[in-house]
Structures are given as structure tokens and as C-alpha cells.
Image (tube, rainbow, N blue to C red; front, side, top):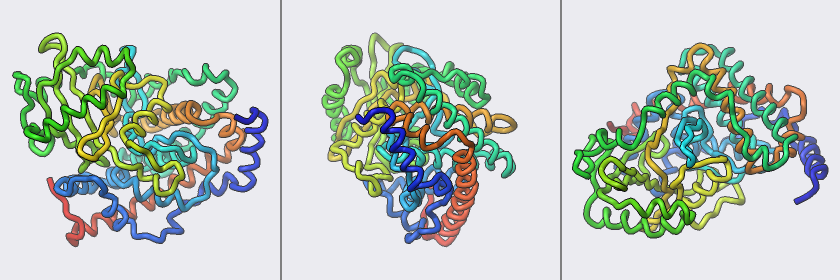
Length: 431
């Protein structure tokens, strides 16, 4: 690793070749692809029968479309100048990918939830995607263009301020950085209250018949039997190898009772997602283990670090690099030629409700989002380099605001093209 002063100088040199103003130029102007064709082609590993449901969920709003169309933004980002300063990207940074979960020490934390697209790439790609999501979510929660721009400004400033703070701290101190402003944000407080109420016993009522078996929930959950059930349970042997010894000891007290297929999210619809109901010390000690299929990151075609022997492992290790604390049972496995990440399902989880973003909610959540990304990038990259590139002026933040407003308009145009394709029956939707 080069000396600190050499890394700082390297970042300053990079700013000369890729100026901060260039970060405000959306790659859409260089598109050599049709966005809807690209979206419809990004179905590797997905079950065709579930794709109409995915497209139906994306058709709800421009923000829903944005959440399900990371492949389009990845292609646009690849067409843009980048800083070359690498971190472990979340990959799908948007405001509804923030939420609460129970950490390994029992504390409720607010952080990034899903890491399906995580990969090593330029730090500003996460910043740009989160910034565009703030505008789109803001418009959906009745904010004006100027208020959306103000929220992005707050987000980018929060990111820059946090990076500068962390760059001045000892390495092992910034790696453990705690975010204290989170509970003061309206949307975060609501998510925390939801998480406090949620626990695995609630899922027994929601998902099972009370006798150790899953019940069918139309278009959402159904039992898996026969060879498929056997393959899922057999995959737990490989999963065990991904756990640290002290976590494996705890997991081995549980025994599997039943297996179900679950339809999840917007971007993940079509991928295989299994839930294993397990029991520890009796019926009041349930464990719901989620085994979620992972394909290559949407960013992989555009980055050198795009090849992994197991994408479940890519997701798991990427999450651990970004977060100071993660799910106690986070791991990976493989089933019938497909890779899977494994974690607990809905263990004290709470999500961001767009209704909570009205008023000051959007701005407050934007501040938290900036701090979260800065901490993740500092843990997996070099805050000294990022700080040196950003500089002390507000120029970088203003550039991100300009980018976010322009790119949100691009997403809305793509959404219009998508809904037109649905009306013309070029895209099939389902319920």
C-alpha cells in the first residue's frame, strides 16, 4: 500500500484528468442501446413465468421502474468518465434499500439491506444512483424539483463531510464508525418501530399453518416438495462451510421442518428465493432461513472485477466489507448450478415507507444515506483518496445535484417508454 501522502497526490492527479464537473454528465447522451431492449435482455437465471410479475411491479411508478432497472443505469454509468478510485459498491443504492435489521449483537441498526449488485467499482457510481433515487422518491412523495434538489445537496454534503471526518481518524476507529443521527430521521424512526415489533414468531402466524408447514399465499409464497425440497435442504451442507465456527455452533441446534418458494422485491422477482423453516429449542424458537439466488452483478460487464466463482459468496463478502455488523447467519451456497446467498428472513427488519418522506422526511433521510455510503466506502476503499478528490469546496455536491435531477428525468422518459411497451403488449405483465 503506498504511503498516505502518495495516495492523496494520486487522487489529486486523478481530479486533473477526470474533473469534478465531468461527474455531472449522464452517460445517456452516449447510449448505443435501447433501454427497454437492455432491460428485457437482463434475465439471466430468472424464471420466465415470474417475469410478468416483475414488470407489473416496475410499472407502478418511475421510482419502482428505477429499482427494477439497475441494468440500464449500470450501462449508462459505464459510458461516463469515472474517478478510478475504487470501493466495494453497494451497487443498488436507493432509498428503499435502506432499512433496519437486528445485528449479531442484538442491536437494531439502520443500514443498507440488500447487496445483490455489490462489486468493486468507482465510488461515485453509488453516489449517483442514490442521488437519482432521492429525486425519484421525492417526486413520488410530493416534493417539488427544488426540494428534491435540496435533498440531494444535503445527501452529497453529508457524504463529503463524513468522508473528511473519517479520513482524519485512525483506520480501526473509522471502520467502527457509528451513525448517531439516524434515529432523528422520521423515516428511520418509523422503520425502527416496525423492526422492534417484527420477530420470527410473527412469521409463524403469517407464513405457516401452525404445524411446522408453510401455507400458500397467492403469488407470494408456496410450499416446495420432492426433488426441489431435497436439493434446498442438501445445500445447507455447503452453507455450513461458509459460517464461522462460533456461528456454525449456534446454527447446528436448529433442524429443518419445511421449505417454501417466496417471491421477493422488485428487482429480484424472477430469481429463485427459498425459505427454510427451522426449529431450535421448541416451537417458540423458530428460524426462517432465506436462500436467495444471486447472478452476476449488473455492473460486471463493465468492470475488471466482474468474475466470481460463486455470486452468493460475492454478495456475502461484499456486504461484510461494507458493513461493520451484518446478519449473524450470513453465508452462501449452491443449488443445481445456481449460486445463493443465505441469511435470516425478516429478523427484526423494518423498511423505509415513502409516505414518511413527506415534509422534512426526504431531507433527513438523505443526510443519513450520505453518512451510510461514506462509512461503507471508507471501510472498503480509501477515504484519504476520496477526500482528496472531492476537495473542500461544495463543487462536487453541486455536480451530483445536477446529475441527479437530469438522470431522474431520463428515468422518467425510460419509464414512459416501458409503459408504452406494455400497452403495445411488447412487454407482458401479470398479477
